[in-house]
Length: 321
Image (cartoon, rainbow, N blue to C red; front, side, top):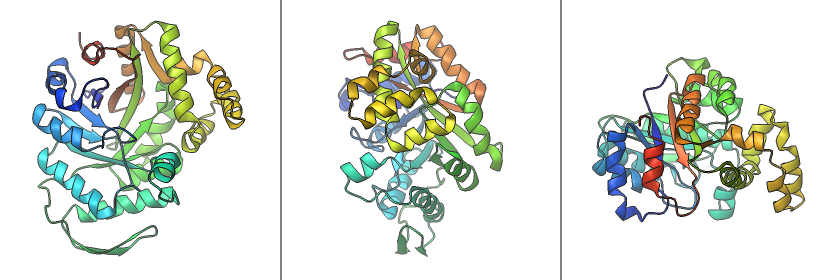
């Protein structure tokens, strides 16, 4: 069983500048970690910089920063700055992100994702030590970069991984993996691949949760989230690899442009597997099941109905009553 219990930050429905009390309450509630994400909301680093001051006992992580949307040197500087702000308490999670975020929103080619992440990890390993980097990688080149503010402790680097190639990369060249959109039972398939390179490799999992909400509403929220994510090619390929054939009708409807049909085609059983919902105590049991299956750090990602008090959700999902 894990001693770690994380939550996704910042919190929905509250201006970032007003979130200090929520951050300050996390350690007393039993949370050990706060992990940011980066898509179309806040950037990954600013909420963690605030957290480093507001809740200095928390471990802080990015889940994840895309490997494409910052230049290698800029990414190294951002990571080093956070590592200096939270010495020994920052973890850098990087990954491919998706074609939507990289190509459609940032106008960058989403090419050779495996190599891009591999090259980024190799560059960061070198750059964060303060050594001068001049290297030709497969997906980018760096000429004469030296980090000007080297952190006392280089942060661990984790890789967002779904299928075997990236999972093995996370274990072989990084310090572990960040998992997303999978069931507790799926962890038993995925985590051992990361740990082929060593039992010390950390496995982090983002777990979507809708606590204290009636089943119909919770499943409606879950269906919307599943349709938004699992029709993205990288996530579809992940669930095809996992053998989740029940999503076939959803994928077919989506390809035909039938968004309502795609939502309706998602079975309750799949929602129940991939989204934790129900009474708070039941949600906590479901989250612990991920730890029992091999997750070191569960990171809860609340997706509650609009208007829900985020403080109530944080309390409900805390590891102890």
